[in-house]
Length: 144
Image 1 (cartoon, rainbow, N blue to C red):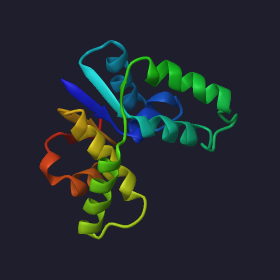
Image 2: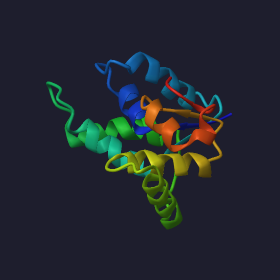
Image 3: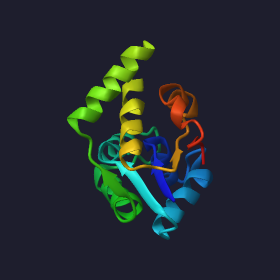
Image 4: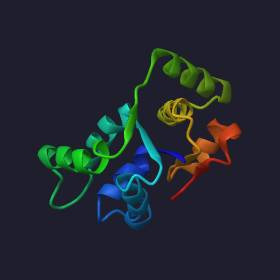
């Protein structure tokens, strides 16, 4: 089985104090155990770093810790899907077709990566937007 993970799942699975930690952690542990093929967008590596270093936690996650978290939990067990110019164009066109402004473009871009990976399952904590953007993939989209 090919599994693609949204950034929301990656962050939740890396932060013990996150409300969805237990659910997301199961996905990351399955990726680590090589129970199938697990994919993320290359862009999600940067996005995860940004979120981890900006979470309102005390003590804060400093950049060096964020890198260690990413290396250990993501880079060691997920294949990365590179974002191409065509993927960006398709994501923009899809959002425009739906009249969807703003940050939803990043979800559309992640869906393009999931398509490129030929994912059988797409995990996200933002199922509503993912399903709206990809009605043909509704059966594949789920929260962990």
